[in-house]
Image (cartoon, rainbow, N blue to C red; front, side, top):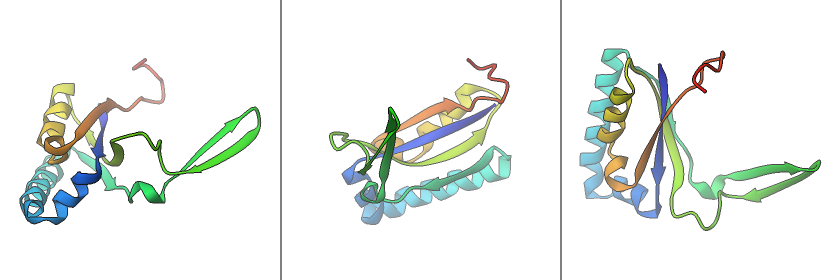
Length: 120
């Protein structure tokens, strides 16, 4: 089954990656990415730009509303994702726990729905 591992950030998370601690965090990330690539579990993933570059789009009763950024009151924001393919949900959770952001903020593990929708 495929899983999306959603990486959450807060204002201090990205700063940590660019400070002295960042070298250790990046080494952990690189090692895990290499492991997942070699095992064939890594499908893909990307980091996302800063939330200040985000637009939120809503259409209600045919009226378009576009606002800057994610919710202003949010202390965390969606910072990136990995897509992995694992035999067991426990493996996806293990990978998320090893991702450096899990030490700094949060990771969310969510199964990706098959076209049949059988996961509902």
